[in-house]
Image (tube, rainbow, N blue to C red; front, side, top):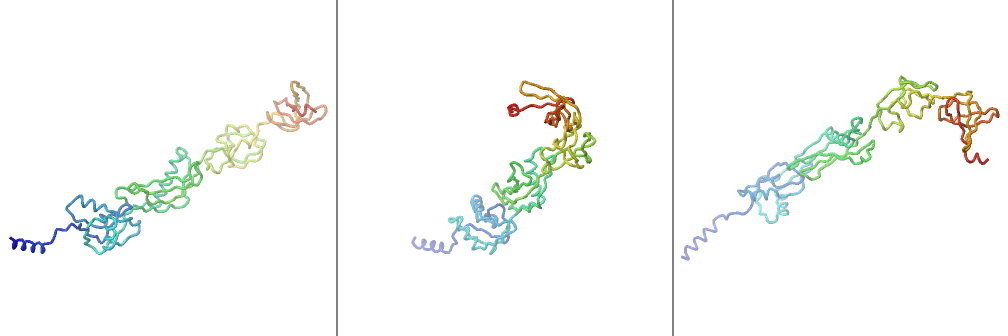
Length: 326
């Protein structure tokens, strides 16, 4: 019996033991997807144990190369990375002596980045976008992002948009497998346009405004006066206060009402002093519309008064408390 035991023991020394090492075949070239580089990106794993293969495949070796860049991983480098990431794993590296790793990427052209930026501004404007001009300050940059292992998406966010200024900065960012990816900034010009009333030709004082004297024009809102008129109704029949050039944006302050009294007209002058009203005669010294202040010379007496035009035959003077005390 001792003799048999010796023979079996000797045979055992010459038999190859069953290895627990995981056999990994390093590829010469590989493409990584996502923001992290995993073992399955650069190597083929040789095992019949499905769970063990999935576990090894998901080992993170570090950050994936940026789009357009590459990394060379030697066997020694991969071995050191595996030892750091999974110290208990026994791995037998085979295959290529080194692996050249490139990043799979998704690339948005300048036109596509600009379109996303303009679309974000339009969404922010809502219905105002229908009358707005949205343009890029300069050509948008190209956006290169790692291709996600599962998905890659892009979105645009307005940085300075409340209230929306004439110049907006928009960030277009990639989201890679749910994590923030690379981003670029785009400058967008916003010019909202509105319909306003302008002079159809040169307007002269002394001639009442008619519909033929004006027209509507669509102009950028940023260049318009705050009181620009949107239609002709408020000024039809009014007189220009001065010469108005063709194409000028019109405001109510550019006009005055037709005079109901003109220089030299005789009028009744009502002087109101508290509850007392005294009426006399006078002569208007300037043209004036209802509600406007005009100079009136009394007669007799030739005293100059400032009076409010009431109608074509009447002007009114209201004495102040100070005047009453004199």
